[in-house]
Amino acid sequence: MNNNIREIINRAPMSRFQVGCVAICVVLNMLDGFDVLVMAFTAPAVSADWGLKGAQLGVLLSAGLFGMAGGSLFLAPWADRFGRRAITLTSLILITLGMLLSAATQSAGQLALLRVLTGIGIGGMLASINVITAEYSSDKWRSTAISIQVIGYPIGATIGGSIAAVLIAQHGWRSAFLFGAIASLVMIPIVIWRLPESMDFLLAKQPSRALDRLNALLRSMKQATVSQLPELATIDRQYARGNPVQRLFAGGLARSTILIWLAFFLLMFNFYFVLSWTPKLLVAAGLSNQQGITGGVLLNVGGVIGGVLFGFLSSKLRLKRLTAAYLVITAAALVLFGLFASQLDMAFTIAVLIGAFIFGSMAGLYALAPRIYPAAIRTTGMGWSIGIGRVGAILAPTVVGFLIDGGWKTADLYYVFSIPLIVAMLTVLAIKEG
Image (cartoon, rainbow, N blue to C red; front, side, top):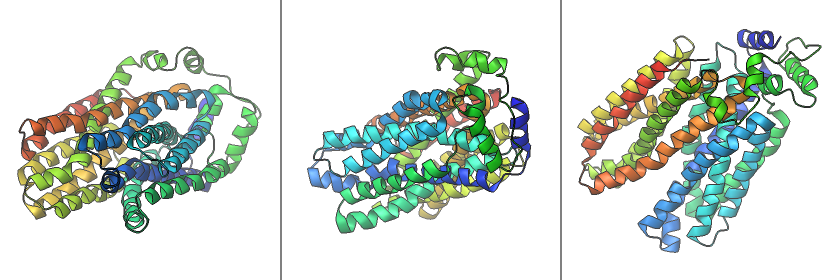
């Protein structure tokens, strides 16, 4: 019966309830896009207000990423024990508190600690909403739904950045954090009201009132109800015991776990190099400060385009091959960017191309990871994949800084950073889906 329920959802047209569920996850990812980058938006004003040195500002910019890694590695796995919806709500409360208290901080140390707290919430929520999106999507639309969810990040960053610029100019940098807190607070009752618990969690863990909750979900999706819960499959019993992280290496999953971790690490290493350093490197290559900022904005614009395109193609092509193709094209675009970084029109055009394919590659990994793991450990698997990726995200800006101090030129950096993407492509092709 377990498999029958899942097969019905996989093959049936998506109901309005399922579409609404995905829409909420997209909005939550839009909030994440703003919350992650709010420190970058406010950095000049915060630095001027408190007279911060470069190293102090660097700590503030990195603190959120440290928190996100911690949230993905240590908060997200609790979703496989207490439910994806419960951890999403917990994470949203942490984000709201972190943003609200950040607006009242009086020192860089306080703000750094609160950026870690906010990051923990973001990291915990990302894994859960990705799994919920995957589980409430049909086979036909799953990769498309995840792609749309992923592009919520650049949309939120772009819209939120525009709002933050106005708020900071009129009311100071604290107002940007207050805006983020209010936006997150508004989503709490919406999540309580309309975001369902993972159906696969109810089937795999069978918590209190699981049958009633399952039937309520089936009715919402216009599907027939069931008279009893299915017997737990042998594989679900196996993964219901033991340390949740150890379970990622049990039952033949070790190879795929290591490969998906490596793919996330390599891609996020490149992703945060591109997003963090491109504006500054464009200036180093001869463009103006404003042109450098424009290049950074175009990366996010390209990300929206690329995510939509990936979603369309993923409903027609095999996911692993499409993701591998996106990674190779991103690598080629980095090489081209190195060649033409000092030529304004070419640099801007290639920036859109890089944004399109690097965000599309990210959508591919987010869609691929849930396919590897059974329901009982799916959020743990997703959380640790993202968390290992965040380690790459933390390392990338620092590594590039050392290389620049060592005399590396803009073109050389983009040439070298294309290589990990080729390795990531090979890694993706070697992954065995569950």
